[in-house]
Each structure stands twice: as C-alpha cells, then as structure tokens.
Image 1 (cartoon, rainbow, N blue to C red):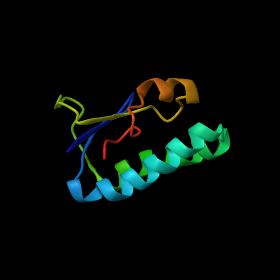
Image 2 (tube, rainbow, N blue to C red):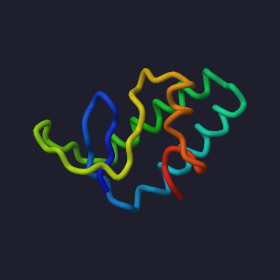
Image 3 (cartoon, helix red, strand yellow):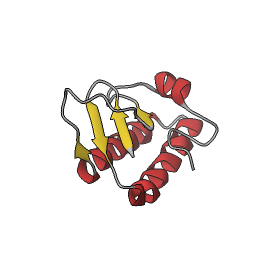
Image 4 (spheres, one colour):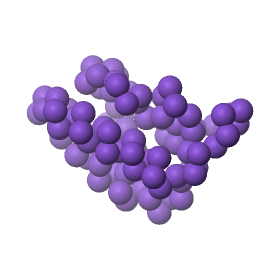
Length: 92
C-alpha cells in the first residue's frame, strides 16, 4: 500500500504493517475524543514515525495514488478531525 504523509512524501508499506498502524490510529482517536492534546501529539508522532520506519520512501518525483493520507507532523486536533473517517485515519 502507498501512504502519504502530507507535506513530506509517500512510503510503500506491506499490508502486514496495518495491525501496528491501526493500533496507533485507535490510540490517536481515543486521545482526540478525550481532548488529550499531549497524548495526541505523542501518538501522531509515533504513527508517522512507524510509517517512516516500516515503509520504503518513494522518490520525490513519483506520484502514485495514495491509499492512505496522513496529516503532517504539525497538524492540530481540529485539522486531523476533518480528515477522520468513522474508524479513524486508517480504515479497518
């Protein structure tokens, strides 16, 4: 799957990494719902770091269709809320 981090680029990840990403996404959703800004910042950073660590970056000139689009590292709670689906940033 291709994952885009807004403002950074795209990474190719194996579908097997969805379990870890979904766990972080669930944690992020809980923190957003409770208004835990500090936890939100920490978990968003962990989610984006996991994509960077587990994925293979695509070249800057590659424009593949992204299956997941994640917010920029400095995105705020309100900005991320607008990106959410019913089950978080990551479906499943």
